[in-house]
Image (tube, rainbow, N blue to C red; front, side, top):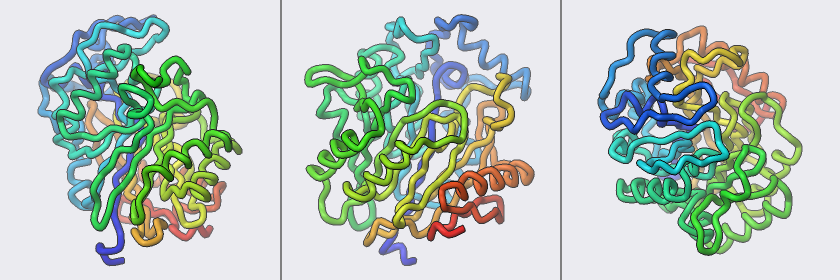
Amino acid sequence: MSSRTSVTLFLSGDVMLGRGIDQILPHPSDPRLFEPCVRSAVEYVQLAERASGSIPRRVKFDYVWGDATGVWSLHKPDARIINLETAITASQDAAPDKDIHYRMHPANVPCLTTAGIDCCVLANNHVLDWGRRGLEDTLSVLHAAGIRTAGAGRNEAEASSPAVIAIPHGRLLVYGLALASSGVPEAWGATAAGAGVNWLADPSTRCAQAVRQRIERDRRAGDLVVVSVHWGGNWGYGISRSEREFAHHLIDSAPVDLVHGHSSHHPKGIEVYRGKTVLYGCGDLLNDYEGIEGYESFRPELALMYFPVIDTRSGELAALTLVPVRTRRFRLQRASAEETAWLAAMMDRECRRLGACAVGHRDGVLVVDSAGRC
């Protein structure tokens, strides 16, 4: 397709720049943690070093992105969207009812700008790890850096508003939703006068209708719409009937052009429904879990970078390329041939269950059948 009638997006699942990763950046936060077994974020760096070797400290801001920089240069996305599961704050107000608190020092925000991130979705279960002050700091730091946000705000109106990104021939609207099933408490929901996330109780028809009404107020002719949803548990490939119905309802009636799901620590299946893309779980892109044992069958060290090409006239998927990467020493690397083959087989299995196919791999990437045929 001509670039005049399509846009290319980059999407990822969870990007977790706190704890261990924050400790190797130029301006590490106070390393004190309040976890049951780990009291210092430095321990996560040491754990990764035992698994993979020495990790440098005070690295350049682009260090963690590694090979992803070359991937972006190759695919040239018109917009880069991530789910940021890290507060950007120096707040000491650790949420008392949580065991895990992710925080990146505000002076490390160039880690995001050097990657050219356009939008950070904040509707997730870590953005208020350091309280409402921590969320307000996160919003201020990102906005000052020129990065748009979706799914959280200083009040309900801001939290439910879309990030608006200029793309060739129009606008891209990105909405963020935090569902209770991902562990986001109702108390984190934004109110008329209080900061929080755009919280939904469940993926019900009633909630989908509320999202549709919001989109109808904001959308202009020619806009493309992405709804980014934090839902479900961290592990397992299952997708509930209610989640599928929710995604279908958004596409049928909103209309939404792409559903961007996340929360799972590993990639899940992809559906092409009525020509529109549903990414049910993008998996983590970056985290500090290196060296942590458990869940090896999911191979959580592997990740995918998602590059959908969308027809701007219809909003339908024209092509979908998935680039396999892996984390080593807190840095993204291109996946090996064996790792790529494993991801291809897993995604083919999971996509077939949803009526779409990962049609194998070539030149180190996976390609999903945009027509949804198996």
